[in-house]
Image (cartoon, rainbow, N blue to C red; front, side):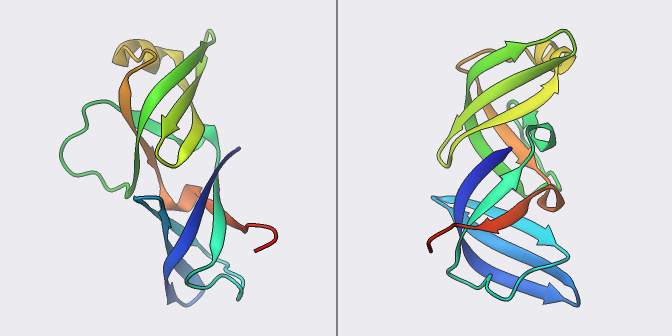
Amino acid sequence: MNRIRATVTAIDCNGNLHRVSLAAGNELITVITLELADDYTVGAVVYVHFKPAHVALAKNITGEVSIANRLKATVSALQKGELLTDILLDSEVGKFYALTTTEAVDRMHIVPGDSVTALMKASDLYLSRVEGL
């Protein structure tokens, strides 16, 4: 499970639906959640968690994409399997993993040192409080 430390910058609510905006360094992250505890307030320091399988990768991305969460990263390492490849990414917000098909890695010619954009849907992310804060 990937984890990024971030600070809550805004919370928008509509009934039980919450859109939480966060800052992680100079990167902006959005999380959509149905439940949000009362202690999640603007200024709270949290972890954003996400599965490696919920990270899509793009090379040379241009144009509009509906996915708001885009982190620029460098491919640090690849662990290729027959069907799936585990990719270690290094970004401004830290290291995290993407898990994608080996076919996609080969088709995109992804190799260590490549610059990529990691894409994560806001509904695929969840929050937890940083202990001790």
